[in-house]
Amino acid sequence: MKTVVLTTCPNYFEAEVIKGALMNAGIACMVSDATRVGAWSITDTSHWGSFNVLVYEDALEEAKAVLEENRKEAEENPDEAQE
Image (cartoon, rainbow, N blue to C red):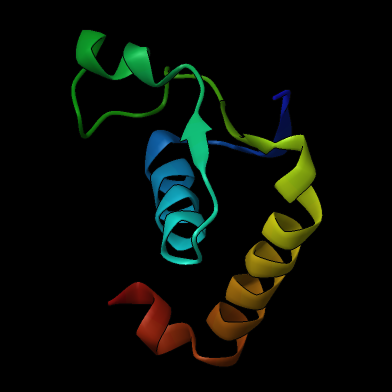
């Protein structure tokens, strides 16, 4: 099966949060360029570049819906999103 980019994140942590939400929804996914993590300090993400969240092509629409739902929840409940 072919993988496609669902979204590109500015840092590894955001990509991993999205990956977790997708996996909780039963959608197989992965983060590309995650191997860079071991080369730098875990707290200094400024030079890591961007990270792609990949899903299988046939799950793209479902993944987009999960991503949108999570963004709406974060906007509606900003205090909970920061916890």
